[in-house]
Image 1 (cartoon, rainbow, N blue to C red):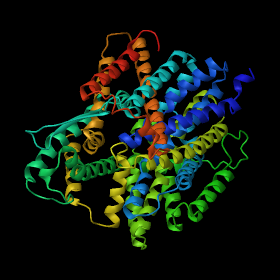
Image 2 (image 1 turned 90 degrees about the vertical axis):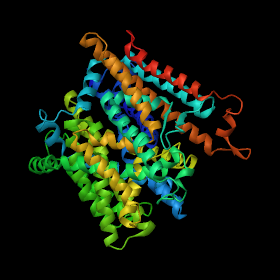
Image 3 (image 1 turned 45 degrees about the vertical axis):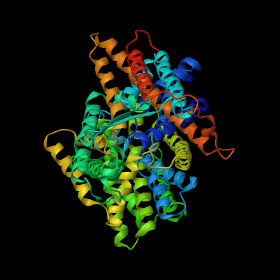
Image 4 (image 1 turned 60 degrees about the vertical axis):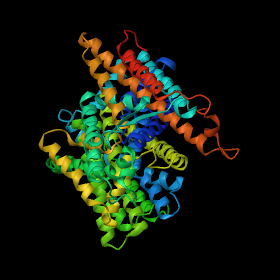
Length: 617
């Protein structure tokens, strides 16, 4: 009985750290490639259950909950970091300045992550306990159910199977170069139009997890871009050189036209959609902040239960992190920026924690909060005379910390909800969150530094769409030399979409992303639709959907880890080139594009098979 009450044990901490590294690295890679991340809470809960109960024969649900708590922190830190920090690398190249160091990236992530956890301590009783019935916290509730069920052995196998298949597939494609990972076709008689697909498993897995509706909205934005906007630009720009490109439109193919013009239209669309989602939730935000101020109990550490970390530790920790942000040379923020971070960070931590309790982590408008933060920070810094390279870097650093605060606060609240259902000790969970944040920050710092040096952000390998968007927002305020006519076209499209009562954000993301990324997401959503429409009883259908989700989580993790491995190979010198070029055998054996499509169809079929087979993988 005593063993069943274990929580913060050596085994739970070590396994949780391993999961935090895996999910943090995989989500960082996915976010840089597709502009979105997936919630790692449920996959982490399944894996922790499988490892702790069936491999280590440890039956404590509280110990397993600690593993899940630490493991899921990697995803939230990654989500906050990849939205903003790659902009620093792109500016360094453009301004011929030094790129951010590993220490700089790690410290920004660590400060934001710690503040995200600390800000949730005084909010826990108000949100998790007092509003237990009003705030559902869907991922937190689902994680608790998985951990209590104790039947996750086969389901954990789904995750591992997906990881293995995806890793091999990715390495054969982009490591060995046996077949191209991108298929594209430009229409000769329909100038400017084109279609294509990235034949890689992670994006199909994202589509399955997001579902057919979201995937359909995204592809509709892609089709609007590649079959309406691009042909119009080609038609009316024939024989002309139009700003911002300095090349005649006749000389560009569909992909070059997209890079020169649609990127700005898409940026306007995504920025407008993010701000609209934030404005629509403002009444809820105002009400939740008012309610939280009324209901927060100041935990002085003298409470009989001693459930949370003591308030003196929260306050002193917040002050220390604020001083570090202000004075540490590797974090380019002045005292005004530090105050801005602490005030707005607590505000958005409150917003994020309550929002995920209502709509879940996947629908948390972190990008909208970040855009609003960057606009405020850029205007503030410009008014204080902080302009040019240093001013833009400072704005992104402020936005990065606040973005990570919001993402981590949302994840922490889900984990605390799981702990509340399982009767865990909140203070131990909060310590576990801090451990997960610490490990994840080091991981994300290493991954961003590695990928930036290996492939470069903004490249075809790492488009970093969200970071480019944030970069454009800051440049627009600081320099005022953006092609605003293109940006306002994107804003107008989003307004029309909102008037039609269609969710604007996924459509805007579809406009912003190359169709090569939207298409596999759409196909993954179609597989989900086929699986959902199978005629079977409710219990079998629930098991089917769970297996499919976990298999796709494995696909994402496997591709992300191999992507990082390829980045390591790309920066290791070898005989005048690098190890990645040495292992690549595309000159010897390269399947044509039709072969790539055939293999991708088999990958899609594996998702259907993993979800629908009678026995778990």
